Image 1 (cartoon, helix red, strand yellow):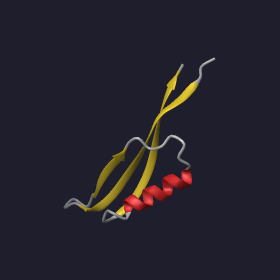
Image 2 (spheres, rainbow, N blue to C red):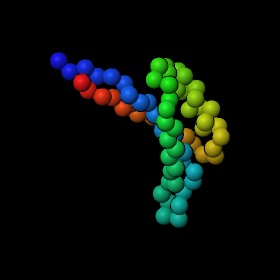
Image 3 (cartoon, rainbow, N blue to C red):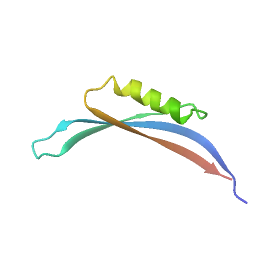
Image 4 (cartoon, rainbow, N blue to C red):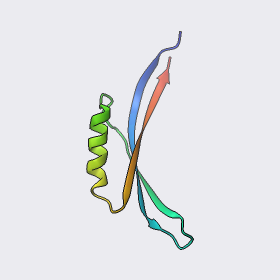
Length: 70
């Protein structure tokens, strides 16, 4: 039976900074690595909101968990 262990957690913040001349949104992505593995969803939302306040534009976030199977 395979087991899975969390190796790394990252937070990805996407900020829509405007619209280009073709009418497409300009989106910049910022990746924050080494997020505490035990971080709760509420803590991630609070952290993402704090980081988003540093940027101009509309922000959204996602998390990426890297796991190892053994």
